[in-house]
Amino acid sequence: MPLGLFIFLAAIAVLSALGVILQRNPVHCLLALVLTLLDMAVMFIGLGAVTVGFLQAIVYVGAIMVLFLFVIWLLNLQAEDRGGSRQLALKFFGVVGAAVLIAELFVFLVKAPSPAGMNHPPPLFGSIASLAGALFTNYLIAFEATSLLLLVAVIGAVALARHPAAAGSLSPAQGAQPVASGGSEARPVTPEHKAGGMG
Amino acid sequence: MTPPSWFMALSAVLFAIGVAGVLIRRNVIVMLMSIELMLNAVNLTFIAISRALGSVDGQVIVLFVITVAAAEAAAGLAIIISAFRNRETVYADELNVMRW
Image 1 (cartoon, chains in turn orange, blue):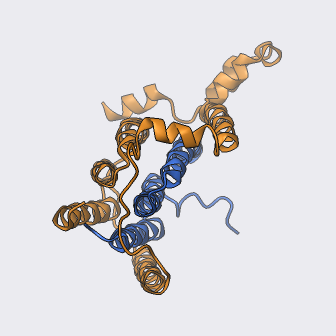
Image 2 (cartoon, rainbow over the protein chains, first blue to last red; image 1 turned 180 degrees about the vertical axis):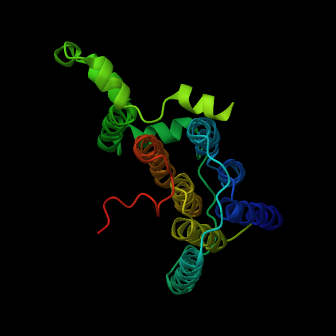
């Protein structure tokens, strides 16, 4: 990747990353994060990792970020108010901690041995074929473990986010009990309630 | 060509910005976004070193990181929805029922 292109992409990445943590409206934070991730995807493609770059754009930006956006809309989040003096102290120490961390990382970066330059990559470097070759031979166990992790995450997400009333009505043993009274007091926030409050 | 250490420096800066986001923000969803930012900063290091060494292993690890990030986002957002249903807030300093 040419140096000028790197500096351009790095400036966009740092500015939009600062936007993620400095904007007060969560939707604006999310849009800044989308810009950062797309910028990183371009950088991955520039580094020869074409497949991973496109997967980043499709999976990260297209799926995970949209999931975040749906949750922000679902919870009807507004812009965050500025906190009191305690929040100010927290912000101060947070910035100091991050500055210490960045200084430490740069010290390690200078001291640790790192590759001096970019090798000439082999042909088809970063293609789907080369990735699959490594993924299904050396990393087969990790690949299967990852599929199990995804299954657990899906089941866990459904179990966690399911409404308590819906959880009660699914099992027949509890369905025989008076669900109507228990169900109405177990739902503090219903969509109808929130819609009525907004209108 | 850009030397690999420049990419690692950018990665360090982005990681520190993510840490600062987790520390200074009150909104739990923005904290999760900052965690995604940190994961991506590490991904950049993997990709840059993979290119510098001419090996595809770093890219495979980045694929795993993207998968784990998806699982983490799904579970984390489900926890946030569940907490919001009980407490009607997403601010970390108001979700203090486990503090003593």
